[in-house]
Structure formats: C-alpha cells, structure tokens
Image (cartoon, rainbow, N blue to C red; front, side):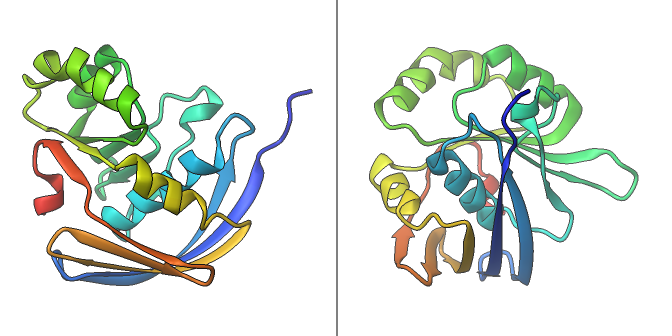
Length: 184
C-alpha cells in the first residue's frame, strides 16, 4: 500500500494591485508523499501569483496528466497551465498545444539555470509560454514558512510579491526568463 498524501490547509488573501484582483482563497493542498515542503510552498506562491476564482490545484504527482495549477474557462477549455520545476521540453510543447497560456515556474537555483540553458532555444519557439524563476534564497525563506495550517496575505504590486504569514514574511521578485505572464 502506498503512503497517503498529507493534507495542508492554507488561507491565502491575495491583493494583486497589478491585476486589480482581490480575494481570499481557502485551499486544501494534498502534499503527495514525494512532494517536499519546498515544492508545496512554491506551489502556494504560484497560486498567489496567478490567483483567479477559477484557478485550481492539479494532481501532477499522482500520475495524472495534469499541471500543478490550471485555470479553465467556462466551457472547460484550458486557459492557463502552470507547471513547477524543470519539465521535459516535450511535455511543455504538449501543454502548449492544449492550453492558451503555459507557465513554467523554476525554483532550484543552479539546476534551474542549467535546465534553462539546455531548453531555452527549443522553448523560445512557443509563443504562449512564460518561464519564471524564483531565486533559491527566496525559496529557502518560503520553505521556512511551511506549516500544516497556514494563513498568508499576499500583496503584489509592481511585480514584487510580499507574502506575510503568522510565522514570518518575505518579499520577492520573480525573474521572468521568457514571456510576460506576470505583466498581466
């Protein structure tokens, strides 16, 4: 029998002044046994960056062909496909054909840079792709905020994100490697 996912509850109040989006989201994140606290926190940050009433958490680690986050329109078509980490170029191309907009969020420092160096030329042909990177120091600070129950205020203005929680806060600016999904 495989180990069960850990349930993590997060209340995320988003004030995105760049997009004029203001809402509170009660999230239940299923942390797969193979998902680190670090990755889960990046997933939560990605939710804050692209928050929308229709943005949903996917199940990519359960063997499903789903992104980490996605937003569908009212007809069921995929508007946004958001993947974390260093996906295979073929998977990104496949997602690009399925969704109006694809976003890759890298977050592992030097290995993310190596992934980008290896894949940048091939990915540059995809016109609906944005690749952003979260600095390793910011991910370290983000991971320190992890808890089984969390409450955060996310304030986004001029592409800078301030994440304030009960156990600490951090300010970060994602690095846009390609595209402009953060320009909204």
